[in-house]
Length: 523
Image (cartoon, helix red, strand yellow):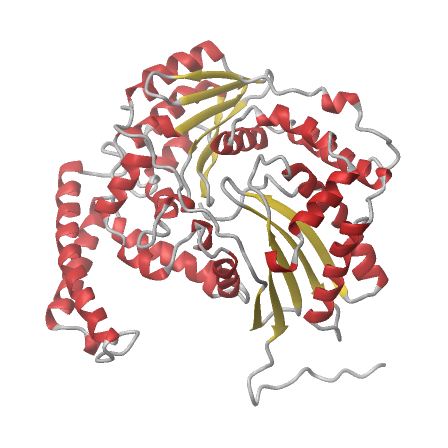
């Protein structure tokens, strides 16, 4: 489980340099999916493939960090964790005692929240340090912390750890996992073809009868994950700050894993409300890819997922859009990393008519045969590496160009070189051969990604969470239709100084008194 982005954007490159057009066999490939919608609104995608002994099975909830609000950031990702904690029959030795302890935990946590707010009030007035020391807590605050720890220990004694995973593993399944993005949360596993009924039962049961046990201790797990993934990495916190700088109003401005103060304060009641809204069946798509009988799968879907009640109201739409940027935004950071520059422009969301041209523009610039490598690495030699890409999110999008400076070169040198290459795209047409090369690479990559049932599952679910699974068939012709004039047009439209944000990383000098690098002598 985690928050790492899913591999739907960058793949290995298969070059057909000599081809003058995309081979018709690649464009002719279509993914034939059998689609059903249950009475409760849940969508079922079935893609039988004969000869595959395992079935890639998964489902996606159309909810991510973009659906949160200030105060509960990180809740979508926390839910990813909670969905592995079991149900009324999985993960516990005694469900009734388990529920009693959980009620006591909620009671103590509610009183503890009042003590925490009183402490924050003192901190705001400068009457208590931040972070607080044990001696700064009230007597009642310390008593409640001890009671909470004792209840957490009682809860642990009632748990059957990782039972959900063990049931799958004992049945021959593998790869049980999940992931949260800004736009959706996805759950997946590979199961033997003769165990798909087990999958239908387990997955429907954790939607029908979830028990969010270990809720408060799991918040601490997420907090530690945040520390490891973001706070302990050289550029993690700077990247968060840059995202918040770039997105002035959009909910994409907060991190998927959430802000620390929110992670520590989210309540079980808020989690239950969130679950009822966004994990309703009408907000979920399920999918099977592999060797199975579609008629049997539909029967099982109706039997198990059909038990889920449709949510009483539709999930609310994401209202807040990014305001138009009127001036360049800049950020300079000292970090334990190589000097580098990143330039980001506001562009368009997934599916926009300009997106194919922007994606291909990124691919013209990237790779060992791309313009940035030729110009910055081989040509002016200001960078060791450079790349660019378009990222279309569900509601917004951006284009980013980045480069790592060579020793002796500054991030400002890389920035100037990157902007120089982007400016050329506004005045010079990309050659037909150059454009066709990246079209061929993309078509070959699309074709290759159809071979793996697992990667096909991820593509279908990820696409259905945004626009529709059908875009796996309708998007390739859109890319093939892009002309060189389209590349120049989008470069002129979006690569404007007032539309960009820049972050420059300078290598942080060693602390005073630290030993410098050892001198080596030539033999």
